[in-house]
Image (cartoon, rainbow, N blue to C red; front, side, top):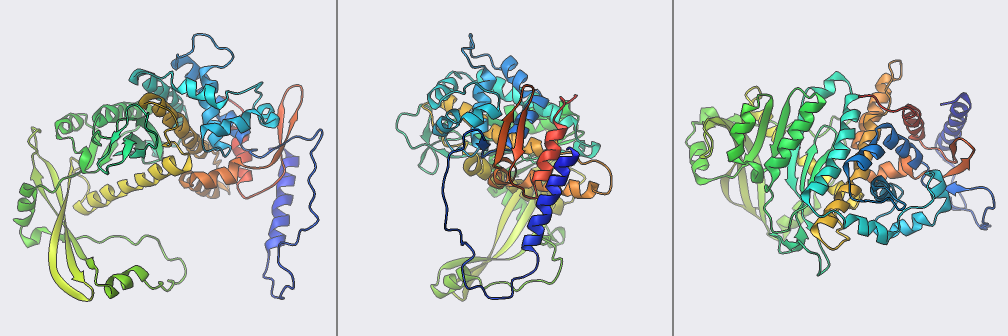
Length: 514
């Protein structure tokens, strides 16, 4: 960042700090929004853009070599008239980052002269052309080539991380129900919820919330179908990146007992899967002596830094009692473990049993007390039973990633007419979320007095929801100035994340080294 840019950024920060300082203790006679004499004019020479952060994203894309990787690995166009494969793929991802929510929003981008100038593009594909490109994906191999092209660049991003990053890779697997609303979408099926839908499989890295593999399937397919294939690919990817140990996590649908011995033989691969509470497991857990059970103590959700706030009244609980609804109240939780060999395995594994003591109530009256069992199978021998349960529960954080893919980047809207084209759109749209994660991972955190603060910013950016990320770092008003040798993004507003954006842009001026 130049000296002048730093000075302007400090001035922005000082002015807004002074404006918001203190409390207004004198009553106001007028409302706060007092603007009245508002007029619109169309500028002649000055050119403005609403998504000023898109330039830093494009610099990141070029720095990690994503353009070349997509053109080299995704071979769908015999002649480039005029677009390359990377143009189509990035066009969809950039549209989402710029605030678009569907293919039709591409029409706004392609008719925005300033947007085209900001990316150095003569033109970009229209919605129909973008849809036709998605329909060129006709086999699993075509989609796998697209995901592997992105993963090649992902390796470069991971290589820039500190040694602590590579101690453990946590791979989560889950299925997603993506509803369809048309009658002519090939490959859809009736889900277990009796909805017409697709049923994508998601394999993600919990450390960074990156989707590594996204596999579309018909809505009537089971969650675990093909999961072992793509888990093996994710394991290979993580070992290639340099991770020392890998932990696989999934719910009861992913306890694929035919694959457990193979993963255990890999050496540095451990797994924690939920497993159905079958009658034989319940009998084994009930037969354990009471001394084998230990109380499960869960940590508080957050640390109270000042004084604990008064909890509001639980309105739902009050309604349940007043209207006499059946209510299940958790009283206590205990854990125990025993050795167990599934029918498809040749060796024993740890079976962690979680016993929940539940009070069944109706209104204020307690009907009975019952026990419910939950089971987790693992080859992890260094964790305690409590740690295994808590680790398995942490997998639920993947639901937040699924929510961001569905509602943040709108990757599950299924705008096209068949399974493969919608699969392609899912992967391209989820690339917008991946680029957001890469922004956090590549944000410089130089040593010095500000190192701790930069680390906090990096983690906050990594956990940030997509909408907040777009509002904070992408959708920034700016002026586009084109000179003979460069395109200047002149930011016209400031917020606390602008400094991070400028640091990221400066760091992405050179290609990343593997």
